[in-house]
Image (cartoon, rainbow, N blue to C red; front, side, top):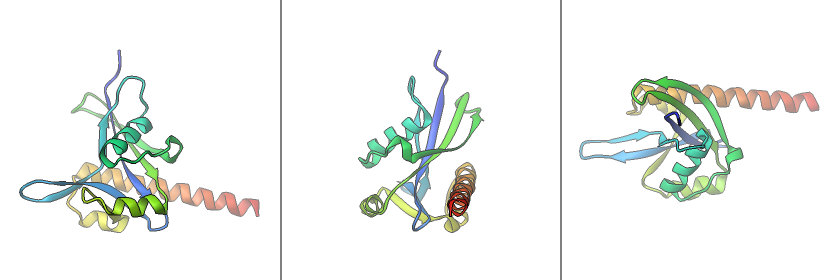
Length: 145
């Protein structure tokens, strides 16, 4: 039997250290959220994010550019919820900037934004994972010099 899971995530642009969030508008306010999708049979969380981004943004992110952040048991879905991020290059960042359904934001803006507490938590943990990956990469480069 296939276990239910969801995967959520954001796009990350390293030069600007900004993330791309989905912008949802209703009659009262505009809110931001992670891109999210339900996992299908034999899909990985990275594949779910790839599929969701392709459907919403009409862009294909290579799986090798999608990274895990963490996962947790989600009592609402009675399954796991996986948080991921995908790294994008300058050309894609510029292309996506023209899309009114999304918004690029800096990590330092997150506390000021209207986001659910879970989304804030997911982004904060994501920032820590990205910062760690950057430090490890820098250390690796320094070690080879």
